[in-house]
Image (cartoon, rainbow over all chains, first blue to last red; front, side, top):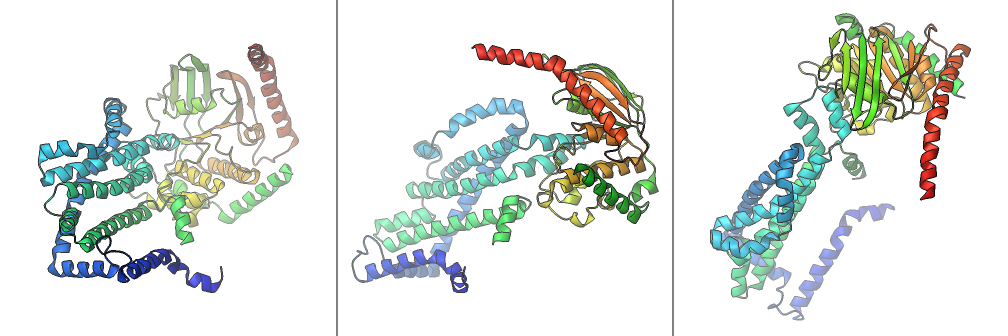
Length: 262
Length: 290
């Protein structure tokens, strides 16, 4: 690669989105795109500024992020626990696994009518849906991770006297971790998706509520802002997992290769 | 070519020994000499379902002996080591270590596998100290120095070569000062030169520490070069036994060793010719009909 090409290297991934935004602004500015359909980027920025100054934007983000975190902790915690249990204790696996595999095929969003009947449009409904959505990817990947821990390493650990907690901490958990983290990344995607749907359908606060409310008043700029905030939150969650991966999986040849490449 | 390599490896190892003097295993020398432990197998049977792996096998290995077991693959060599290490229980018969029957994992014994089986998520030094508690670090570091890898103590296993990984595995086995070292073809996957270096290393450690060694190998030359006694295992029991009285250090490729190697090979190959081949052919013929 030549020197000039390398200098522009960090810019390259941004060319396409920047170009799109420029075309979008141009289209909205010249009236080619109706603001009813799509507000100009400048209008979205302005809406962000106004909502940010009044504090409403951050208030709603806080509520949504809180729901996401609690739902993720509950669903992910149960998924991790059951995955570890079923992976390590064959009788537990026989008892639970086939039922869970069956439930897995039910789209959790199909439960929304039932969930509204059970919980109303309270916090409980949203937390339940997020927890349910997050549970399966984490459960499946944890279970798979534990089951596929190298049998040779397990035998070695036994031969060298590792058992109980130290066996779990030094062999099972680190061996399953790459798979668990894949589950976490899947789960994060599902977490935001579930929250968006739940908040849009039945809510009196949160980003989803903010955008639905704005739709009633034809405030397309706020709607687009809401979508962008979701995208941003998703990106933040993904980056956090990447950081965890880099920290916890630094022993992994794939991550060592990445580090020398970057 | 192989003989040249062997000479090279031996010269190098001797130079290494001269350089390091008696300090290669300072811990063992300082603390206590760990004498080997005697192993006695009495009418040992091991079955997996209908499949008989070991049949009525009896064997006495005296303390400090270097025993090699050769045989075709699938003749029960690895199973035997697992039984002695207490990783698996025999279907019938008794295994005694130092006069006491083995029940569960034998703490005096350490097993070295064909692949190094290092935990990829622990650094080299932590791998050496696996299963140890208390202030094991200095000891692990000293043992790592003894196998010549002290400068890699902070590396991940994934960046080591095959030979280096196997040396770390050897250090991991040695750090607890075992009285019995069980080697399950630990050198099988290494290239010729690394293999010779490892053989020399294992022999010198054994001579210094005096533990008992049971080496399972495919390589008859390796067995004859290292062992006091070579056992041929066939169909789950001892088919042949050969003492190797040659003094150490042994010179690879010497006429005496080559003659012994030839006898063992003839023994192994004739066995296969008598029994296994006709069965095998019969099976092929059956398949051909259908």
